[in-house]
Image 1 (cartoon, rainbow, N blue to C red):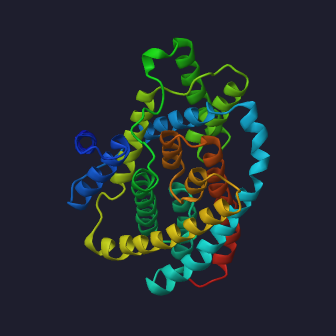
Image 2 (cartoon, rainbow, N blue to C red; image 1 turned 180 degrees about the vertical axis):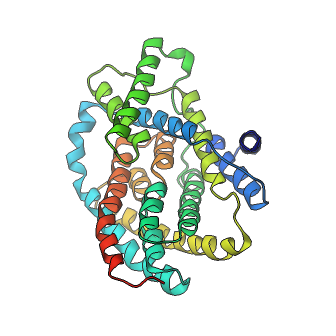
Length: 341
């Protein structure tokens, strides 16, 4: 019953956004409708299995954009890739004192709140380090939500990018053989990556396998528009439901702290984006989407819809998350030497 109610609320969001001609109705509609319902006290929940399946669709969509030309161009990305760890370091230097001294969080919670990594990864590492899991969940959910909601309006209103174009061909225009190959890449890539313990297995496994199939010419199309819209819907709904059960005290402290930190991250991202553009290291659109500290899946959606170089953008976000994850063991040892509280 709760899941059915959540679907209805998410669908209502799509309808309202469509009627008002707001950008990305299948993504932003469910996010905001579920967010509002959660803040009003409605019980909501998502479906983890379905959400992972939707991430697999995005993985296939990203992998399908690869070609030999794109693969050979990846080593040339090193100047902007090297800027990612610098941005993460800057986020930590500013973010940890911000959460610890201004909002009174313990060091573990402050550190993992400041790190712009994946939501699940930061919750796992934060819990192991003794951090406040509920606060971490709300802070990272707010980061993803604010970035994902703000970017489409920036792209559309400031940059004039048309976000209403279909994100792919319609399903009835694709050969059945290609559709079956996509399903194979999604399911098998996901299972192999999960078996290997790869982080973000549901999106990275399908992306890698689909990329191999695309480079060899076996996969010649990305998933149809209907599949991408469906992925947007469920991913947006999942982001909104993160606020289910939030209390007034949590809004005043955790969400407020997250909103302030989002401003800091946006300023940092803008600085690094501007540097990349001024040094002619990346085109403006790709630079903006690559340094925006949103969720990996959500940034892949925006890159697909905006017509950006998807491989360029996703490579930077994978490297960002990988850098944060590789730094977690070092941070855990550092946390072990500090008093909690």
